Image 1 (cartoon, rainbow, N blue to C red):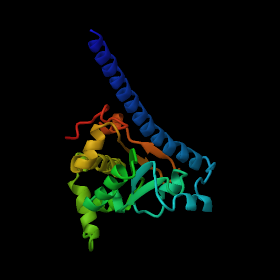
Image 2 (image 1 turned 90 degrees about the horizontal axis):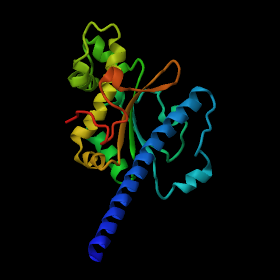
Image 3 (image 1 turned 120 degrees about the vertical axis):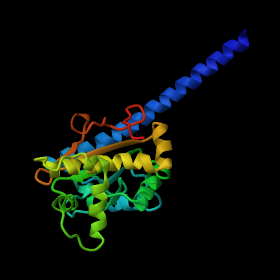
Image 4 (image 1 turned 45 degrees about the vertical axis):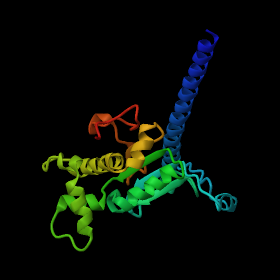
Length: 238
């Protein structure tokens, strides 16, 4: 009888520890998201603190890095994550390509940040009036490897669902493209799938406004996708 009681106590403590661990991990992901959004609010209201830019910070992170978030965004010169989120050296692991497109190399970079550097948040940030998206919408002859970018956007399921006569097609394709990248990460990366399944990763999409500097989360209402995207708040991405 005593043995049964002991095992019951052990099992209860084990479950409580696991629950506490899950709560801590979820809190870390939420904190990372709000840390980005709070930084963007400071930027928008011209109250940027410009943290982690000192030589002391340079020395602090010289031997190792521990970014709290991954930001995937466009290479556009007007969209600089450390500035628009008011972060500094060592805070963000940034992956930038035209149209925030993802191939195996970019996904591998994100896998490294999540599995080796323990970043708990991936934020995919499209932006207003994206040139890559505009090139896709306008069509015509696309020179060089730029055509690969445009063709990739055109193959995205989320983009193909948008009507050709949509009065706000540019805006909606920008949103769809960012949402596609979120789903793509989970679909194409078994490593990220595993971390996601363990509730250790949140994937979020947003759009940066070139006119006002504000980052807006893409939500369920317009995009049929719950945010933040976590294992306990899943979207049909399979």
